[in-house]
Image (cartoon, rainbow over all chains, first blue to last red):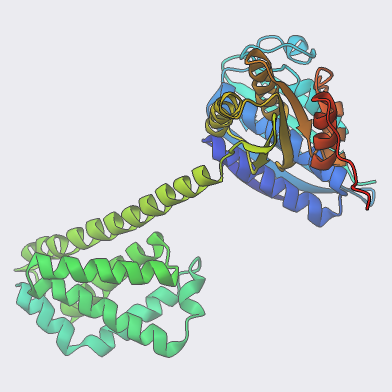
Length: 133
Length: 275
């Protein structure tokens, strides 16, 4: 069972809209403040990556229920240039834009499950889940 | 020919309005019309209909003023632009079909009438969209100004100690402004310690952290120390999980502790006065 809603990322302010949506869903699902902060921060990182590297894309928030456990799924999808070396972007401190390089590995640590699929020249699809304990 | 259309509308206005309301109520996406009280709906519909006729009879200028007024009213009512353009389309449809049924529009003059209708509706649609976008532009620019007013200023709290409270979302533009105000303020107030208070920042992601680190580095270059205060417990956990290194920073949970620390750095302390 899932229930979804999404935000198109076109400008920097859409990042705020995306994480607002995520925060509301997380709150409704019953996540505590720490997990809410984790989820919104993860959305913020993923949305910013779309804005910075792909130009435009979409953040989708889904409510999950699996074996009676509730969870939230963040999907970040874009049709951008793709990521040439996934292993490298998952290393701490690697950045092509002069940032801190903690984004993707950070998101992986913030969430319970993290999957990334990318095709050069076609786009990137990242799925990150957090379960309510 | 304009007069003919206008004449038809005036003679049959009740019928046209009720047909038009019927069509509008069937628009699934539009709840605003369905929940509107009847008298208000009738009044608005009448106004809308009058406006459509005015354009046929009067000169463009008189009409334009009315249209602006009408559009502003509609914006206040919360009608969406899609709804209004649909309203125009449906209204014209009702009038056209009505005239066709009555035989006023027949095979001989259909071309001329079609052209006349299009000349009638196109300016209405154009200026409605124009009024809407002007209203939006005004709102956006006002909000931008309001947001800039919220932007950070550096407040001297003690000799050599200044505080910059950060409130709200930090985007690239604001980050630049924060940096400028911070450095200017440090020099102007001869601050030795600057406290950046992030109590009011909802999310600290890597970009925000990056901007804060850069700001602190710049502050160091102009000869002052930077302290990060107001770190809420959930933000602290997120920062650690993200793997952001703030080891070079002195950080405290509250502004109060930060001020105490800053006073200690400048060899002062707050003592209670004894009687």
